[in-house]
Length: 411
Image 1 (cartoon, rainbow, N blue to C red):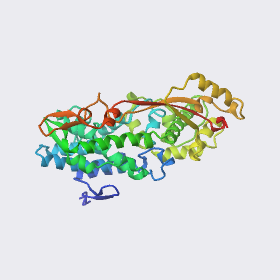
Image 2 (tube, rainbow, N blue to C red):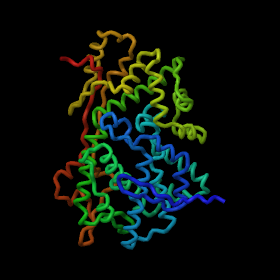
Image 3 (cartoon, rainbow, N blue to C red):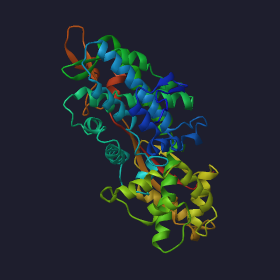
Image 4 (cartoon, rainbow, N blue to C red):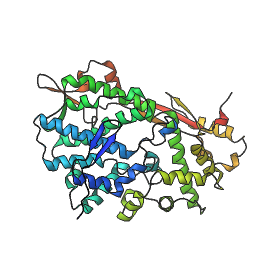
């Protein structure tokens, strides 16, 4: 008989003590698929800008579980009926919402796998775990896939004011040291209610919602879309693409067995069999770091140079603009670069390129954040807020960038 005590407590620097509510949640946390998240950084390469940002997706998932417990407690207190099965489903859905993230997150989605997003891989993991746990994840999967009839449950897991966003803003702000990202998640949760199975925020919580949206906007510009973090992620993406390109040319690229598999094969969503999913589950940040350390000495000068850039934090120059950069500007930089030594050994497309980033703190198209007014009516927060900047946050802001080697910086 297994006498393991499964009602464990985690000591979290954000919330204090986090409790595991039952044995099923404990067993999911103990599963190797979930334990892998200890080795996946929450903020990718942001630690190159904010040295404290070394927390993991394991931290984040537990934080989401904790505030989901708080939300369910508050909603039940306000007479929203949530059964034990629904409660467990919400815990499972929020706990596993990020389980499909690969090493350094988004860089993997555009290089190692063929535009397969982490949400899709998360769902594959959930289906696999559902088989192992004899169907106990079925309701959680329905909620995750927007197939459950109680709309507010999906909103708690995935919406413009969900447990995921509440935790990552508060957690990432703490670890990065960026004060502008601080939110009052306790206040937001206390102001939650459900009307006709739809999640609402009581009117007296509107200022906390406004602060939440402003914090999200500032965190994106100051942290998630910081130009150094951006160029580091793009460089990593290019490094992995170069490794795949070399393999296709018949050139050996050494790395861990599981990373080697994804470099050697073109993997689309339809290709994710259980065997491939298990191979993906063996990948974490250490595979990438280990590969970069090997590749910095590779005979291919392009792969070697890209790897050294990340290992030594000696990155490309990146310039941001409100205006689009043109192909002619890229060509001009390429021609300038051709005059420098070692140019013949490099592939310019990996070192000189342009792109764009977008930031929209609040979308009028997506499911709105609804405010329950004192007279019982319900309104979109963007329509009733007296903050002009909140309406501005509904507009998508696009910025353009161009990257190139530092040797091209004109004095």
